[in-house]
Structures are given as C-alpha cells and as structure tokens.
Length: 226
Image (cartoon, rainbow, N blue to C red; front, side, top):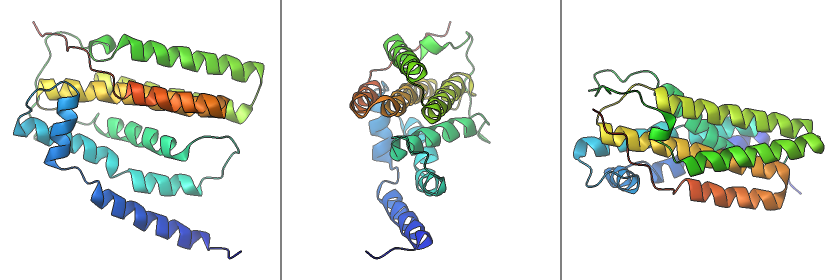
C-alpha cells in the first residue's frame, strides 16, 4: 500500500475545500432562500445582502478549519470531524459578529432581547435533556476524553447562544432576528450531534436526526418593540 505524504494530503484537501467553497459561494438566491426559510417574507435587497454576509462568515472558514482539525491528534473517540468543523465555524462567525460592522445602519431595541424571544423552547429544552443524559452516562461509564469533548461542545454552544443574543444589532430588524434564531437552533443541533457520537454510534445517528430537526424548526415570532 502506497503511503501518501501527510502534507501533500493536507494540501490536496485544502484545494478541494476551496473548490467546494467556490461552488457553494453564497449568492443572492442563497441569501433570499435563507431569510424566507427563517420567517422573512419577501426579503428586500438590503435584507438579502445581510443573509449573504451571514453565510459568507461561516463558509469561508470551513476549509481552513477542517485543515487545522485534520492536523490535531485524534483522541480515539468517535466524534464526527465535519460536525466539529461546522460548530467551530459557527462559533467563530458569531464571535466575529460581536464587533459592529463599520458603516452599518443599526436599529435600536427599546426592550431587552431575551433568549426565548429568538429561540424555540423545544429546541433549547431538547438540547439540555440530551446533554444532561449524555453527561450522566459518561459519568457512570467514565471516558475522560469523551467528557472533555462534551464539555468543549457545551462551552461552544453556550458561547454561540450568548453571542447570538447579545451581539450588536446589524441592519434590518426582521432579518437580524431571523439570523439570530438560526444561529441558536443550528448550534443546539450541532451540539446534540457531537454529544450523540460520544455516547454510542446509534445515539450518534439520533443526534444527527435531531440536528436536522432543530436546524429546520420554524423561528418564533420576534418580540414586538413598543
């Protein structure tokens, strides 16, 4: 069997990732479809631009994150690398969004924004129950690296949720709230997918199904500003 130089393999992967990024590069159609799915009816050109920018923040990071994680030594636990990449990309994108965009038109809220104003209670409760069950299982049947992965994923999801709630408003209110909701729901789903793979392969499949369900849960109606 021919051994491939790891650096050549890494380079080939990065090139492939960049080609996929070029194919999946966010367009106006992607931005419009994203906002429509998350509750913005007939989005305007300005709203579509926000949706495209939201997607770019994430997709630009994915090839490089996969390359970095490919170099990290494997700990032996069955953690889906793709899910970790997407979760990490979501986290970095939300943290980058904490810094207000230069020249952005911001709409101030007259009432405080809470987590349940943008996120489904079903999604958040399901995530908490799933993580709690996994934590109990991993404490009863100790696997310390799995517990470390669990703690890291919970921290990542917590930071994403915090950033999605507290980051500065960016442009149109309706689009901004819809994208915050998407961030929370997708992060919770990714967290469940990571945790499921730590417990058992069959639970991992359930986690992936829950990720799909959470990432497609209709957003709550945004709180009306008074």
